[in-house]
Structures are given as C-alpha cells and as structure tokens.
Image (cartoon, rainbow, N blue to C red; front, side):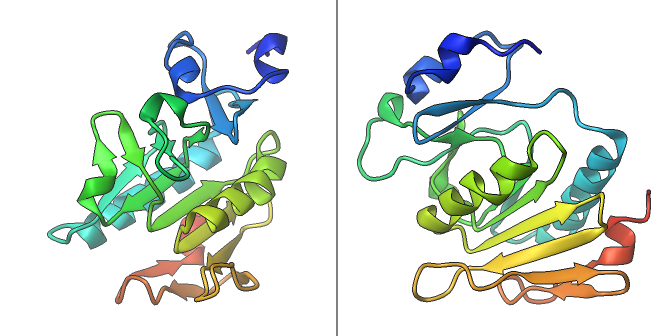
Length: 194
C-alpha cells in the first residue's frame, strides 16, 4: 500500500478519517495518521483467531463483547463531538464490558482489554504510541503478543492510572487474569501453530 504523504504531515480528526477511501486502513493517534500494514501474516491470523474464539467462548452469556480487527475504537478524550475525535485505532482484539461504549461505528471509549499482535511493521507503534494511549485512556489490561519470540507481555493498569511493569508469559506458562476470573490463556496454545 502506498503511503499518502499529505496524510502523514498534518493532524486529522475522525471527521477526516470517515472520508478516506474504504480500501485504505489507517489509525489516528492524537491526530497523527498511521498507515496500517498490509494483510497480516498467517501466524498473526492464527493468534488472532485463537484469542477471538477463546474470548468468545469465555464471554458467552456474560456482559462483555469481543471484537477482532478491523473494528474502530475511538478515544474521545473528554467531551469532544464525534467528528472532532483525534484518536481512532483498530486493536487486533478488543473486549468491551460496558454496552454504553458501543455504537454502530464501533467502540467509543476505552475497552476493558486490548490485545495487539506484533508484526515487524507495527511493533514500534504497538509498544510505544499504543502503550501510552491505552494507559492514558484507562484500558485495564493491555496484552502484547510477540509471534517471533513466542511471548506475551501483560500490562495491568494500577490504581495510580499507570501500567505496572509487564509480566512476560512464554513456553508452558498460563496467563490468569484478575480482570476476568477463570479466564486462562495457555501460551503453548497461543503459539502452537508456528
């Protein structure tokens, strides 16, 4: 996909974002446009499918909803009108437990849990810009899956509004989250396709 230089050199809002061609995939973080990478790899899609199906089974009959990319999540940052929102991302997986944060356009506010799956094209953005965004917005848990190293780092939002040092899971580890009692993620299953 060719990157449009004019999109990279100015600030944008959700209003602008809605006018861009459907064939293009972009994210906005604080008004800065980020070109989405081409179609994800087979490994990326396997990991995404694993999380989506595991979460779908776990949340069945519960008050939370699971969405896989592409699914727009807007971060209004105060009382901005929808068209003035300057941050719209498409997490690989997002879990919303507050129905009021969902509308026909996607999510509007912080998901409870976000999973990003690293790729060479997105790793820096996922580990820096998105980390800071999710922390600032109040995403309770942020998981970063790294297919190349077969690891997952889980960041938990503390009472002080910051992520504690990430906990690394790999090999035979099982991630048990305090946010969702009984939800267990076996690392061997997450990365078994490789």
